[in-house]
Amino acid sequence: MRPLQISPDTAVKLAEKLKVPIEHLMHMPQHILLQKIAELAKEEAGKSSDEAASKEPENNK
Image 1 (cartoon, one colour):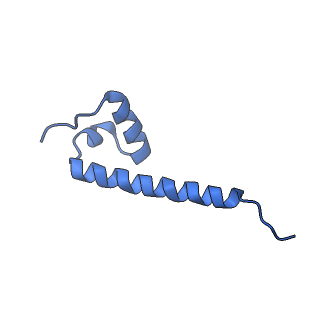
Image 2 (cartoon, rainbow, N blue to C red; image 1 turned 60 degrees about the vertical axis):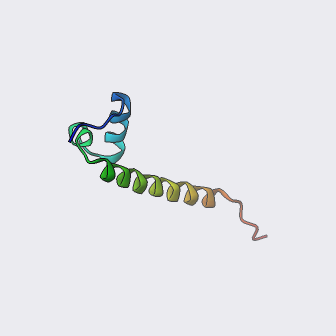
């Protein structure tokens, strides 16, 4: 299996977000990496929707 074809900057950012060493990330099978990225995106979408809901003004007057 060959290493992923991503830039060093992208590898560093993904390793930080996924909390894995860069060496593990570079040799991770592509389908597993895509699955982890999808999970990360789902978590961030959930966080952003929670933040948006908490910032909405309440009309309880």
